[in-house]
Length: 274
Image 1 (tube, rainbow, N blue to C red):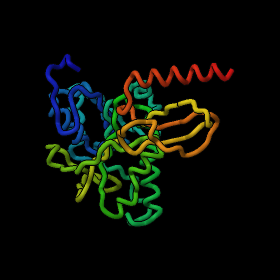
Image 2: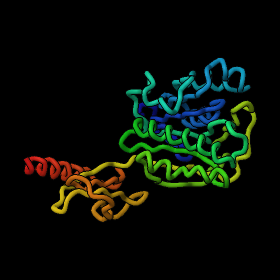
Image 3: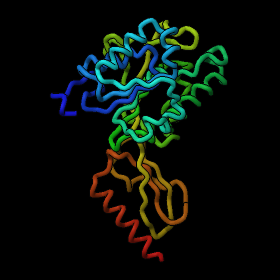
């Protein structure tokens, strides 16, 4: 993105990054980023609502959408986070940052403490992670901002990410005044109302990388700790499978030379067994 001059940043986000925003309410968060960058050619902003629904449900949505489009942002409507990786426009695009602020499945079973209600929230987030993982660049991150107090802590965001092949890079407190102009919205029948954020965090996830290494003792399945560690070969074996050690490891924890070496070792081991 150097064509647009010097890098501009707002908190975790840079004008040099290709950014996808999903589940936008009135698109005020996307507008906040665009104003900080001075343009939005590097952004794609999406919502589950149709354009017509936005006009009815959010008082500022259409003015925000028009501002985004005038700054170069691609705005897409009726984008489901459970199928977005197959969306005709998004299917071949990869992003440095994918942002989902305060995901919510709607009020399907009353209280947020209801276990079935929590399950629906988890189902929403799990499907999002599975799709978003396929849409990252090699150094991309998925950012989910979420309340951390009970019962929202019962969603188990980090565990859901791990099951989708992601690991937690960092968790930091979310402060709404870091993003001027952003107005969080309720949705679900009370769309244009804000809600108390309370104690919330932005969880940053990166994609795990599957590595193989031949061994004389058989195949082992291993997984790193959640984040960069001292070395992939220190991971404890978890399960015997076939004939290679399989390790999940962060893209950031491994040099290019190590990847080339491991790939070469795998290929030579396969030929040796034939």
